[in-house]
Image (cartoon, rainbow, N blue to C red):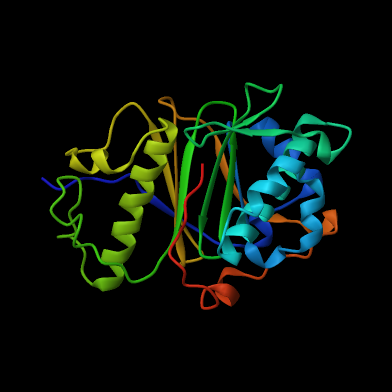
Length: 256
């Protein structure tokens, strides 16, 4: 009997899935979790102005340029989102704390849960009213040799290479999201024979170029996946995934 993964929903970047800054609060009130997709194309050094001194120091610890840019964009946009939801006086009033296990907390707001993930130029920023874990992966050629024998993995129902790649990243994002939900290492879960029942999973195929999965629960909640229009904040709008997918094929680096 083959493993049955949760369904994967096709998602497109359209006007219907757009969210501007002044719409964030209404989405937050209507949902349990929100995920905002942004592209690294919006990076500008001016985004560093909302980082605190400690964050600016951490930025310099990243050697690859793309890693520094991911850090700046994700933290700056996250702070803008939190500023809107929490109704703080200034964006700079938001202080983020990174625990030893990688989980990001918001100072003075223990009921706000966050998960960040990067792949290529894609950044997924997830906020929840309960503990969450999320992961995004750009679809790309991958060597599955190391996990092909794992009990949780099977691609015997895939009809071609394209389906096999999507199946691999669908499974991997589910495992990674679950591991981040529990602040743990994802690899032991590959030895399981089925996905755990103590979590609710949601997966999307984004613009046919990446896979995003969310783990929360165990009870189902309301989740919205949106592309964030940052132009009203004076931040240049991102390039589309199609425009940028060939610009950077760097393997994904994950941060909580």
